[in-house]
Image (cartoon, rainbow, N blue to C red; front, top):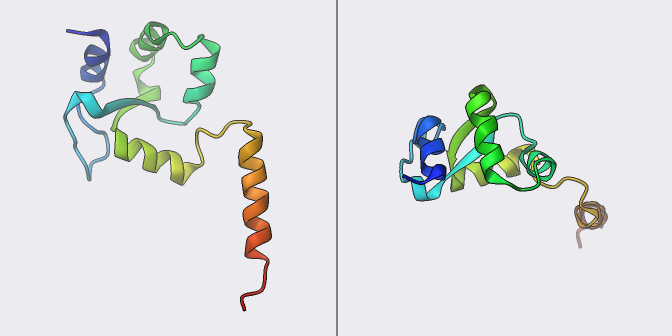
Length: 103
């Protein structure tokens, strides 16, 4: 069994969203319950085996989500943008556009 599949099974082997329950490990992802996944990967140098060690040591901080539920969570919680200057520019542009009068 590969390491990724093993850690997904350790986290329950299915999407933690009770309305979903997706079980195909090929589209399951490790999610940080309170966000901060990109920051953690940068801290550990992107080495997934170090992430797997952290998951085993602190399983309460992680959950298994399917790709769709993970992206929806990221969108709804504003996760994954970090300090990206393009996000700030994009946000400023959209504020400008919403302040324009509708003709």
